[in-house]
Image 1 (cartoon, rainbow, N blue to C red):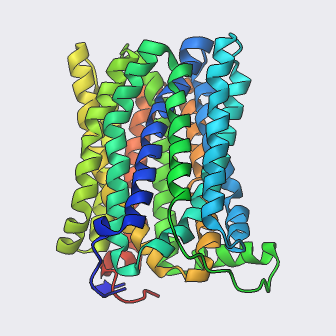
Image 2: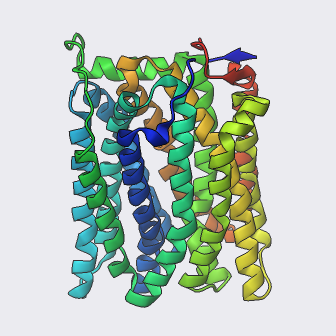
Image 3: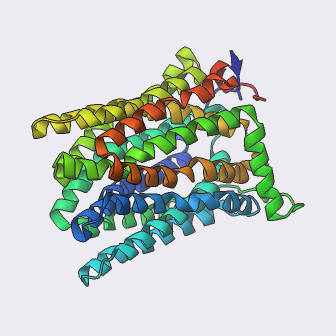
Length: 418
């Protein structure tokens, strides 16, 4: 098997700078989980939206990723990546706070929800493009898998507590007020980032136009065998899983007739799988190889979604069924993400992190709005349950991209892959 960086990985939990970054990410992720539940519930409970309108709301969150290829090239030319991350956090906090303000004046509209989704998505793109270089400044290559595991554990933990707390908050204080939690989390993240001492290296003198850098990022992703396979795989997974994501809360609320609290409990309980998957990812990778672990995750992530269509019975059975499906799916997504993310960073030249991330995200995340819109169309025409089956089975086929690439034979991050 091929190996892809060495030197013993440092103890990241003893690195104050990484710990601070990790805490900031954890706080922000927790707030995001509240908003992910609250935003569609605002639309469903206050505005009586259709499946197509819910899918548009989900699509708008991810639509700015289509511009990621340009944002990434622009970020590569900036020295102060941390400053850009702080600005992105502050933008998202202000935008989200507009919802509770509008609610207090009984002025929430679908147009405002769409704008909030679009602007928070734009802030997320800016943050993600700058985060790539900031991550590399904090973490040595030998610790990429461990660092991604820790950050993914936080993300998984947020899926455990976030939906349950979010569902409770929505029922107790209404969805628009619950969004305040996410706004505060962004403020906390910005404050913590500001206190992290880091040496940010100025980019080399610009020899190319922004459009040339954009083209370089696209060419890198398309021509590199590892990046090309990873992009094909994750884009396929994202397309199909977002068919389901766009409709899951609507399906649980309308077809399964579950309350906001019950939906939060089901999603939160299932997310324990993500916590376990993130913790296990480095161990499984060492046991069977990085590439094989990623392939296992690619199948386990989307396939269980097809079983969502079979959930039924009394309330406890519906909640338990959704939780079990989310549990297995969450293990899968972490086995995939932790290993593929580490591999992608390892094979990317240090001076091309932003434009590679932009090119990659433009396709990988840009396809999510398309998946959400297709989900809305299919949910309207063939029904929610058949659409969920299509999403689960179609997503599992993404593993074929990795099977036909060098990724399947990569064991560890030890030497540069070509």
